[in-house]
Image (cartoon, rainbow, N blue to C red; front, side):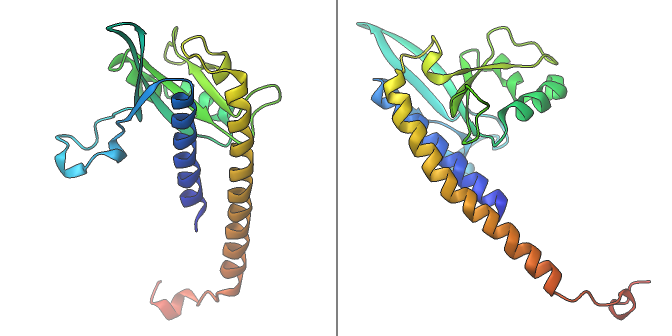
Length: 192
């Protein structure tokens, strides 16, 4: 397995964990992301669609609805800085098309004092400015308690540490293969 494949698995696990947390907190969750649709049925397969549509009754007949994009990132701070540098091409610009769009960032290596599940706070988002995060259980848009969060954070650390070991193994095998494979002289390949 390659490192990219392992990170893709971590992303899918992150989505499943966020979905489970939301359901446990009493929200209805519908998968909506592009990867969950049949590409042949989509008019523009490159068009962005958030991962989840999330809603819950606020009052009888009145629902609060928003969209979530879930991303695994090993280093959340670097990801946010890189996105800020992109300016108008940042993934956060999707908020102009999806006003109730929020980003949940999942990591097994949070900065000290931060949770494994963080929300990119986009209320005052401006291209080029760094985006701040808030722990999912402290975010005022959701009613996710610390009790719910703590059990899922333990699962993230356990699952991702096993995958981290797999990544290290894949890197080591790649290095051993790359060194062990002979590189024929360019002339034998017909390369000038």
